[in-house]
Image 1: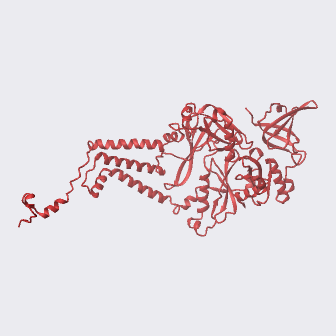
Image 2: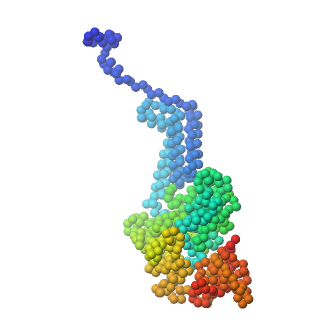
Image 3: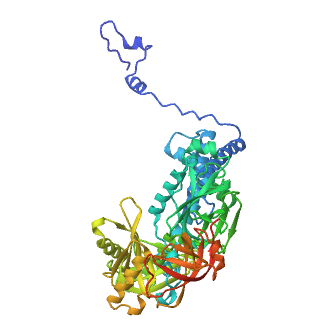
Length: 593
């Protein structure tokens, strides 16, 4: 029956065309959704694929140029690179294909899956590889393999490590070397306004001397732009013994360095020529002729995909020309291939896991770790890294120490129970506490067949003021001195007084001919009984060497800064302070140019 309700003169049936239905009126109040229109599709499927690939390729080339990931399954950054490429392709595919679905979440996911099937499968495969690679590298399962990364031999310190001469003892640490370098650069007005010093100094043996070397870098981006045509004009050598800094100017500047920003940037230069290799941080060195090189150690993973980090050879890059070559066995003049952190990490793996993973947690029988510090010392024209070894359950004393050749990774462990390096530093600082000197991290020396910590004592200005020697096994045996010679003489006397060495070992026996090497710091001459005598002062010695020109005629050729090996005779047991001793002859180790 039709609805006939009227209100005044208003007739709903008439108003709505004579057939008003309340139910229809209510349904019409809620508007039905219209189907979503599909986005416009760009071209044919083939053209869309080309566009997607082109955009992905452009992104990949840009990312590769900036981030320089190694194209290697052992490199974690490779997986990030591939994931980003897949993500970029999928985003492009969605935009170029337009959305074609029924508007539901299920329809949207189905569309995405259709457009991104191949990238999705690639990501899934990489995730599986990552999981398997991580599992195969897990130390819990591969503890035995980790413990064998570093081959360790036992040694006898006093029998195998010779007493070092004064002219071979490094007296500077990184901070002191950096201060000297900055001060030297500040003296050169033409350089200090344009260049700065690269803070990473490398300790090497150069022409028989322990030195630290580093490159310059551009002051800022503008100075790089105005100077890059000529390259970096010089590098710095810091003599670790004489504490002298030298700016070595180059006839042709260094154009391939870490300070470059474009194609000549060292990292980019390496990546473009060795796209699959992984590298440790490059180090700056010079060969015996003074040619600057970058030593770029090649990293390999030897346990599973991501474990067992080790070094296998190095790429040597000429810093001037950019010429490069990979050596699996590096030349002998190279001093540093293995960094301290890789060596210490590999020893820690050995110390922790050589009796199994569970033993490293429960029981901890014979579990050892390296101490918190390291230093370098030259032995037989190679640079060795030194660090102490302590028990994992005790940080108060060392059970020994290791010496590792930084070129070959040859490592020896020397058992020697005694004080830790930090304990030795505190003991040395207590001797001069009124002066508030700070001790550097110690070197390990053989003095009178006694393992001895040697360290420099620095003032508040960061410069070396004194030297200290501390006996490793009895660290209350401490001696200090203003020079190395004075410090050693006092130390030997203390050892003899404590009965640790025989009285005759305080100094060499009088009357015998001895040999020593050193750098000439002063030359004087005088005519005595018709013969010319040259009185030569060598750094580290307290007296003058007397060369009689009638007996040693080549003494007339000596110059200050010549590095010589000389023979001399003491008439008493000690070198006389500011005295004169007869010299028997000399030969050049290196001479001043």
